[in-house]
Length: 76
Image 1 (tube, rainbow, N blue to C red):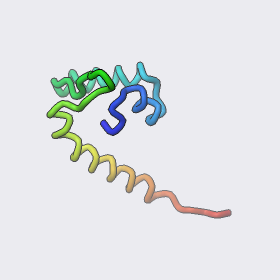
Image 2: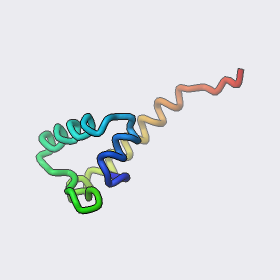
Image 3: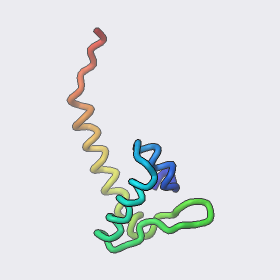
């Protein structure tokens, strides 16, 4: 959603564009919504995607905290 481009989002996630497109297709089927609408210069989120975004962002932030909180810095 932040990138407004499947290609840039795939790069950011370390995935290929086709892999991300396939994952997005599965989400579209599961959620019964387009989620993102193609436009001339990228994609725009659907109303459903905008509604889901805050909850997903919070869940991802919690996962980051849980994972990163387990890592200790050892300068050696």
